Image (cartoon, rainbow, N blue to C red; front, side):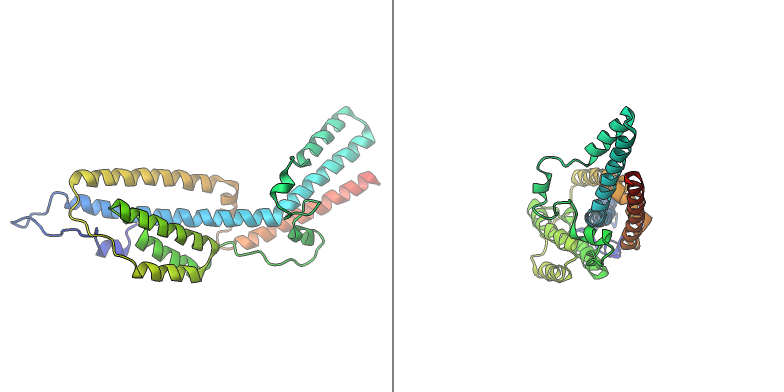
Length: 280
């Protein structure tokens, strides 16, 4: 995708003059191809990074809100299998009960990893409230706000490391973009505005003379390789369970979580009724 900036601007320091007689420079067409490839790669990286952050945020909320309910279902399945085995004494039922119990047995040291986030029953406070049909505090937004997204895109287009032609400038941009990504992941609009002001006041990229043809070819090759790597990342995100769920409700992932929670609550109620019948 070619942005208006790409159409109107050029490589920093580009010499648009032509040799005597008005003939275009031999590398001029190649330079245009490099500019177009750079802008296309930046747009693609923005899209992949945005989706990666959405997947990470949704995954965290999915685990926080729904994970304990999946654990509760596994526990009920184990209790049902154990109650059925106790009633029948059948070796196959006993084997299934052992397998069901093994699925919910905690791994050694797991609780220590959560540093007190869970209680003794392995439930988050939010999950306990949901199972008890009590109000819970609203989950954090799955996505950064529209304003944060706009600020992030503007900064990424201006300060992206792939626009640097000098290693020192690339390092400066990489450090800056790392901070931009971190602020965007948190949805911190205030920090993003501060970073925008910092970039506007910072040093300008050093101007470069015309790039030799062989360096332009090497640049295009690097851009193509980078695009292939990003395509692998994007495919892994899209094919993952969380990415697939996000594609089901791209406009309202919070509502999708609520729908899944309702179904899980119905499943929990059904399992509890089955267990009560077996125990009765």
